[in-house]
Image (spheres, rainbow, N blue to C red):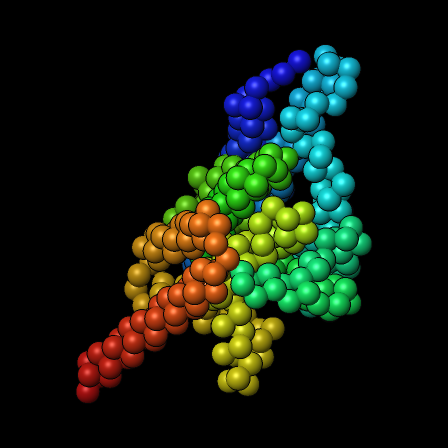
Length: 370
């Protein structure tokens, strides 16, 4: 029994979209029995309490998509009597089990954090444990591939690098979830491009996992786009950060596409969070305290508002993903380092423009006072 490539992909991903949207709508309504509100604080860009249970809908949508894909595989097996090469996710099972195990740890501690609050140390400990669950599946990269320059490092260094990368991805996505439509949009665009890269590499199971995640994010984004009626909370943001990092390592380990391509896709989040953290460290600030100094937060405070800022960020996300696709399709590794250098310069220019706008606004305010 063959469903054909169109239906094979459409059924799971649209099941993820539909279930995520329906559950998000329910959690947004006043009928929802589970009500966890995000009250504004010094880090927030919103001014009234908003439900922060949307992450549950995203995870549920992803789970439904995977269950539908598995059911279709089982039905095909029952009709044919043997596993067919075009099965949806059969070939992805070994790695996927390790990913799910780590993601469940992150999702559980994040849900408790959303409800009651969890200290920094125990939360960080669970993130480290989740990273090592993933690495137990052998997903640590054996080399750092930057095109013409490949560094084959010792296994111990690969494990250390991967563990730090996973913990940082888990947390930075949460740091960046502070504006309407932002983290959901990054999920839709980022996982969408990862799936495309995987499909072009002939890994349909990987593509299905990524696109189910992307469509689950879209179901949530319908209600999270400015002005947001619901937030994804730590449950959604931390889990998506872990999931993104895990899928990037999975792709690199299976030879689908190199590590740099996945990092480039999510670079709008990675660069903002990393640069902001370094700036705060150099300034002697307490980096674990809430703040509003991310570049996207600074743009909102400059008067851009949520909608204009998030649309500009979407443009950067799409440009990063498309450039990654272009570099992969060129098939010539000599262009990788120049391409990544170009993006380094782009982010440097964007950071300088934000600083310049802030100085202009400050000058106008001082002139007005005088």
